[in-house]
Image 1 (cartoon, rainbow, N blue to C red):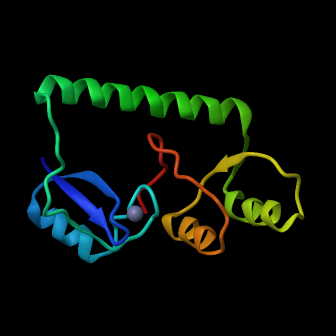
Image 2: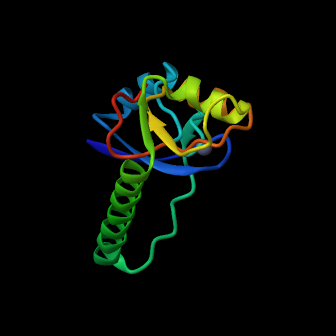
Length: 135
Ligand SMILES: [Zn+2]
């Protein structure tokens, strides 16, 4: 496995693990890579290495803190938001249009559906950690 630092066309930096460089090229060419922040599939390898100071131990601490943060966010969402499953995209649009109760929801959506919502000005956020697929 190799790690690449990736960046989308909106300059969000993230990382991806690949079996080898050919696997990365194939997934990238097929549009299977998407930015976790904005769901853009215009993803390329970052030429600029992220500035990380403090050595591997500090990096591991940061990674652990990040995982804890994500886990806390997920727990908060699961306890306070309505799970709407596959209806997520429809329900988000209904709430946005005022046709459904204003509330926090979460559910399943593809990267393309998320991008469509964002394009229409509907605030959504990918919930990392338990995605059904990376499509
Ligand atoms: Zn992005």
